[in-house]
Length: 64
Image (cartoon, rainbow, N blue to C red; front, side):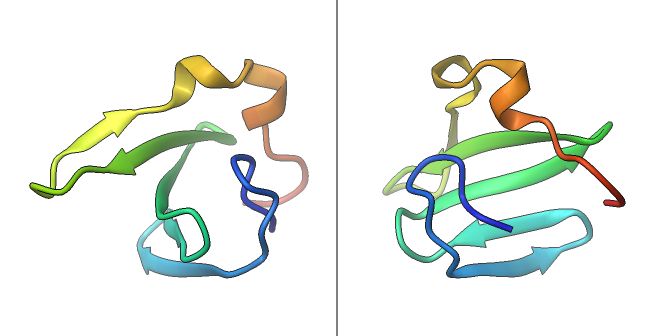
């Protein structure tokens, strides 16, 4: 798995269907075979990054 934001491979699992990129600090959630991307803000809140990527770029193929 590679991060769609930075193309990095330093991805860690943080929960059920939840992942975190340690390179660019983006949180990813898998929902309906699609990644939902969020930036973690300084106060711990999440800001959606989904509008920066089209659905094809966020689509997962194979088993998830």
